[in-house]
Every structure is written in structure tokens, then in C-alpha cells.
Amino acid sequence: MRIARFSFAGEVGFGLIDLDAGDASADGAPAATVTELSGHPFAPVVPSGVRHRLADVRLLAPVLPSKVVAVGRNYAEHARELGEEAPEAPLIFLKPSTSVIGPGDPIAYPEQSRRVDHEGELAVVIGRLCRDVPLERAQDVVLGYTCANDVTARDLQRADGQWARAKGFDSFCPLGPWVETELDVADVAVTCAVNGEARQEGRTAQLTHDVPALIAYVSSVMTLLPGDVLLTGTPAGVGPLEIGDEVSVTVEGIGTLTNRVVRRD
Image 1 (cartoon, rainbow, N blue to C red):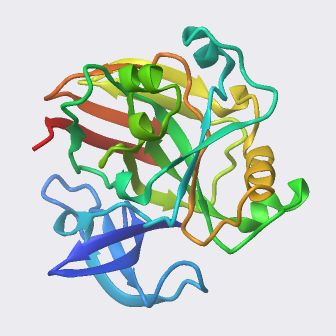
Image 2 (tube, rainbow, N blue to C red; image 1 turned 30 degrees about the horizontal axis):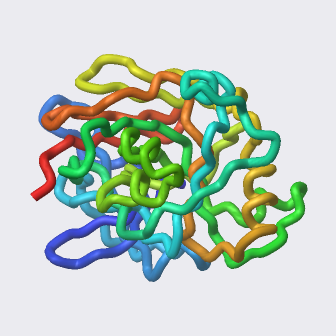
């Protein structure tokens, strides 16, 4: 299933995405639709029967997490491009919930920084309250997966010596376009493009610590709640964004998350 969070006629809800189930569009191709859910996706999924054309709704960040737990230097090539080695244990840090935005929302370039980078990633969405999850049961706590951009003020990251400010600005965690619940993420492509030019290309098979290992590790540190998000790390090729750029993160089997960079008001 593809589960989205969306707004329509002033109301916000969750829905199931079907990319080819609607009435034919003007060019004869099936139109994508979203079918409203009764309630939220962290319980049995119950479609209400109310359906909209996807083009008529606004997609929002697919979840509103209590926290975003991210993992640094989880691809060896990315660690090397930063002049570091991949850590033996996952290097985790937090991004605030206020950094989360959805597909199409603007990334606001803060005046404090002169170097803001893109970091395309696979994101894991937690589906149930959990703590101390055994490795072999990690999949049991996953709702699904989405695309993420761990936007980073690289100059501030280096200057501060810790990452809260550099990773925590409002709009520095785009998520979307939806949550894919039926995906084997052991080896899927993760790419990032800026203005249509490929910048990052990697596969999750290259992760130093894979998804089950990350869930087990993070849940041994902190309780995870339904809707919490785990960012799994970014492949090599991170680079600067400029005001006016359009940045797109694509994860094979999920879709593409696109945002434009604007000057922060």
C-alpha cells in the first residue's frame, strides 16, 4: 500500500494512493487517485470509500513524527568524502519535528549559513510503540518507507562541532511523497538530483548498518512511537544547494520527493 497524508477542501487526512485506478485523463492515461481512510494508518487500515483525483489534493508530509532519528556516515563512500571513516556503531542524532516538511514545500535557506547541502536518503516510518526491538523482529515495528532529504548547513556543522543547529533548521527534513508499506529495502536505489542533474547515486545494499540493525540499535537507546522516522544515511555525492534550486530524492519502489530552495524570510 501507498499511504499518504493530504489536505482537501480544508480538511487533513490519510489516504491510499492508487497511481492508475482513476478515470482516464485528457491524454488517455489512467489518473492517479487517493482514497480517504477512516482514521489513521497506525491501526487496521479502513478505506472510507471517498475518493479524489490525486491532482486535486495537496500532499503533505506523510507523518508528523514525535522525533526524527538520523544516522550519520552510514555509507562508507560518503564517510570518505567527508574525510572520515564509517563508524563501527551507528552514529545517531536527532532532527526536530519542526524540521519536517512535505513534497512541494520550500526548503528555506537560513541567513546564518553559506553552505547548505542535500542528502537524499531512505526513511523508515515506525508503526508501533517499541523499545529494545530484537534484530529478528525489526520488521514487525515498521509501517513502511518513504523518501527523505537530510538537509544540512555544512559550514555550521563544521563550526559547531555538533549537529543540532546544522541539521535542525525549519524545513531541513523533507519527507514524502507517501509511505510504501510493501517494499524489500535490502537493495534499492537511492538517488538525488538538483535541477535535473544527478548528484547522488547509491543502493541500500551499501549501508554499513542495514535497516534491521538500525532499528535494533536506536530502540535500545530510546522508545520509538508510531509515526517516528528513522533516516538511514546518505550515499556519496552530497553537495551545495542554491536559492532557486529544485532538489529531488528518488527511492526505487517508492517514488520521488521534490522541493525548491527559497530564501528564508
